[in-house]
Length: 151
Image (cartoon, rainbow, N blue to C red):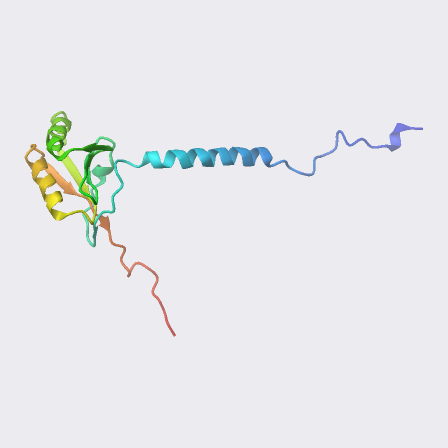
């Protein structure tokens, strides 16, 4: 018997690709991104007031921007840390004192009490802030969307 007639499969081409390792890596990356993404948001999340013609304040998205957030229930946050109203002015004054750009941004929840927002704005003005920016969301124009045609 000759071995010439038999063909060995050991050296032949592989017809199927094993995608299991790739799927494992993708799932690990997905889990990592799902865990890290909430940490990437800067400061406290509030449902801001919507305006039709807001002025773009790109500086508010910078890492070193001083942002005061006011939640629906009237709590104030400087960055991510909650601050008592009587301590807010002192902490903002300390944060602004060593910066060239003395701008403070306020993002208030749309359902927060107006009185609380005014008190915080007054306290911020007393600290020597050069510019005070009120952050809003832009209203999505219905004219930007595709027109609806009815027959």
